Each structure stands twice: as C-alpha cells, then as structure tokens.
Length: 149
Image (cartoon, rainbow, N blue to C red; front, side):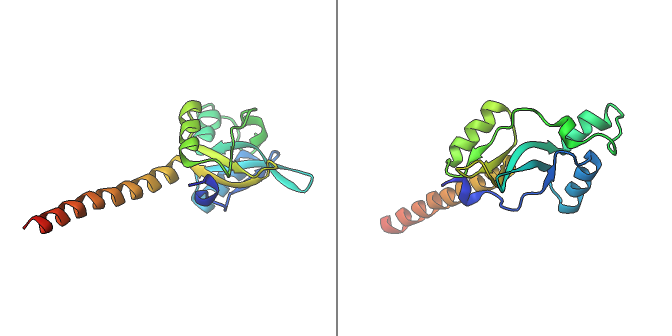
C-alpha cells in the first residue's frame, strides 16, 4: 500500500515568516500537533520545514521566548525529511524509525506537498490490519472445529 493512498491530504501549512503564535493557534483550531512550513516555487507548494507542538514547548515556552515575535522559520530544522507518495508503508515506518521522527510530509514526484503521514496514522492502520488477521485465526479454528465434528 502506497503512502499516497493513506496519507492525510489536508495539511495545515504556514509560510516561513508566520509567528509561532499563529502556528500554535492553527494547531489548536484544527486539532493537529504540527504545521508544515511551505514556500512557493514555480507555482508548487514546497515543504521546507515542520513545527510541532513539542517544538513550541521545548524551543519557546521552556526558554520563555516570545511566541509573538519568533517565527516558524526561526525554529525549523534546516533539513526536512520527506517521503514520496509512491513509497510503501513499511518504507515510511523504517524512515521514521531511522530518523527518530513521528511525522513525514508526503511529496509528489516534483517535490510538491501532497499530504502528511504521522506515526498515529500508521499505528491505527496497522492495528486494523492486525485485527483483521486475528479474526482470520478465530474463523479458521471455528471452521476446523465444524469440519471435524
């Protein structure tokens, strides 16, 4: 299953010059834990960073910085890790594990923002798949018991 088929296509985004306060307000409004920082290049929306609720707490709240002055561009990490929408689910999980990240912006072949996938999304999908497999085991046992009686 490709990441493109399971990613969230409704990504909350901000420009680099948006204040951290604005980003936090968007997170609250849309009930999300991150915003993707973007810029426009050749009529494409290109992800250049990500700011999470944890970033805000660790970088600003804990250090008592003013979130009305600091921009998201000030706190994003310079090298954003992304994944192509054609990548597989297990490739995404491996990348997340290798890099120690919980969220991956999903890009198309031209590097344009296509969606986002989070650890929570993958856990939910995997738990549903495991539940389906466990039903198979139970059904197989019932079928065998019925055939043998």
